[in-house]
Length: 161
Image 1: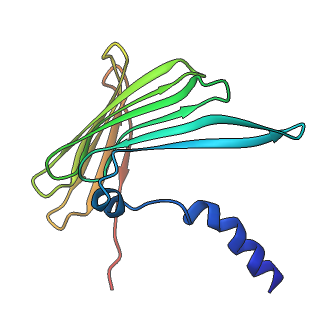
Image 2 (image 1 turned 180 degrees about the vertical axis):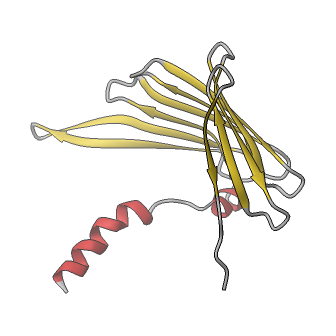
């Protein structure tokens, strides 16, 4: 019994405070800032830990993680098509100094057919092409490198009942 209480107490911070997309939309939340208060030598130290911005449909359009000194550690911006599919993601990480942009394409059924990752200068670093069957099941993924050379192929098979 004691173990169950401890597990529940550990999970509350992860599941107890997050809002669903529908809650964000229905409450017309535009953004959320998370502030963290830590104790050091008996004194509270407060800093902004993260910031998240949402569109009118409750989808995340920007996420920022901050260091204790207030510098941006990571920043992510997202764009969606009219069907709610993520079509573009730009990610910056200060530690590596790298900015990556991922652009995704979808077919008429809303299945992802292509994903291209580029660097800050627009140079393609990798590309994945997904083959989907008429039932919407992924059949194959091909990845090419920055030179357009095939890196690997994954093929998927499904067992049915």
